Length: 217
Length: 243
Image (cartoon, rainbow over all chains, first blue to last red; front, side):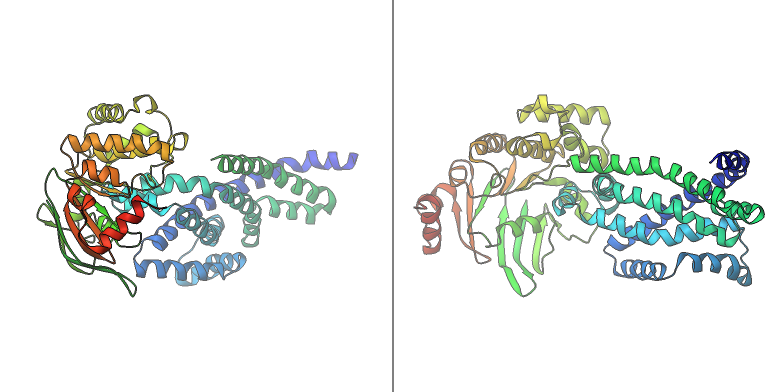
């Protein structure tokens, strides 16, 4: 145990560099997946056949590809097509795209849960599609969407570790590098696990808060 | 002001409107009565383009109702609607509900709209509820807010789709009272209702609809007191003397 604390004190600063990248990847891909997910969801509920079919197709393609393969594709294949991305860019892009499918389905479920009468009331005072979305549907859908959105945040935090496979030196990769050079596997990976947990706990509490609020109505 | 000419409408294979021809003059109060499923509500919903129609023509002040044309916004801002289930926006306060249309659709100046909103809430007897949220109100109060919301658009006509059918009996009177006041003030109203007392006392004309056609129409008192068509007689007997 004493050994662990000594190791912890030694490795903690290095691992914190990894934490910084983990947070950058998580927040970057969270923002990207939210924007893309909103676009897919809007296309899906637009009532325009071409758009909704395109969106449904896209979502299925994205859902059907493992994140790790998507990351490899962006990082190793895109340069052959003339697009070179840094590892960090590829990681954010890959995770953002991968998660946009889940975000889209979540947003769509929230939008479709809104009572039809709300949309009719909006139309009856002359609101068009976009105004109806912005003023009536989306503000109400947010309540429904927030708890699952919080869960996505937790999953993304953990899945950001997949960026290690394309050389992004985030928390998991930093841990692996230290472990393989010091052979102190137990100390290092315990510390890594604890650091992920520490980052997750505020998010878990946030989800609980969202759920309580949504339940109250 | 509102004209329907040979309007047909089907939901799938079921034809719910089989050639409706009717008109509503400015300042007139027209009640539409008839059994459920007869197409009463569908007529209202076609007038402001919530529903499309298959054949015939509907026009409001000479402007053809076409829910896919940009002109539908103009029609909707001139013809307000009050729904059976109120359909207030639960995430906005009562006052915000009332001013939503004038502020965001008609883009009127804020201060002026808020002032009008408060005046309208006072008119329907809910001035003190301006900052409450709809779920905190009773059904009757919500429906009165919905009427204020419709009025805030400064419409030329208001369509009422069974405005008291979802209310507890003791709350019906308040809503009908507000509507009667509107009628007295000269508002053009089309009211789908089961309230025969309201139709008799307030309406200028009554249309009796059954099976997607207008079976009988005429001045309210005459039609309700001495219905001529056997189907109207049968319907009124059942509504007025259910036992």
